[in-house]
Length: 266
Image: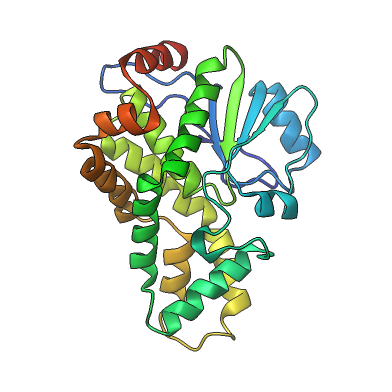
């Protein structure tokens, strides 16, 4: 769970070194999770290319998000747009201009008493587990990993917490990492997105007169273990257990699991 020290990308991590239950470890420099790459400096890109042998990028964001903050074009690096959410998720529409608009919509609903922030996020994670569209997009992510013979694959969304968090949790499960370690990696994101939460809080504190504003913003923009457990709980409710969900809904059976372990464990 090594954080990659970059100038403008604060939540980019190498999964290398994470142990599995069978005594192996994830290979370093092969699996990178991240927040958005928009704003990356030339030195950041150089680090990813030269030190981590970046070969491919998988972007989980919607078309609107990609258009607003496009990834840098990097020579020699394959790029795949693989949106996990449809545009209307989280109240987003094709007219949505920024993450702040989405946050405003959620805060307004919370003010009206129609959406408890933590309950909203738990519901969203359950929805992702249930939606056929999201399942198909995560299957596509695994297809990319299965075809990646060399170099590093980096996957990202906006903050690198929800869509990336779920993708990473599924991948670590397939590779044989125990649930507590998966949760530890997931929750580590909270440390690196705190700067974003503080910036948003400063922008909206005069707009919302409520004592629990920090908790609301942290619920929407942070990570909590019950979110991840809600996803896995819904997956088990759908398929009976996590293994069956991976096989039946994501398309990762025994053969795919063996291949991924051979590719990414040492």
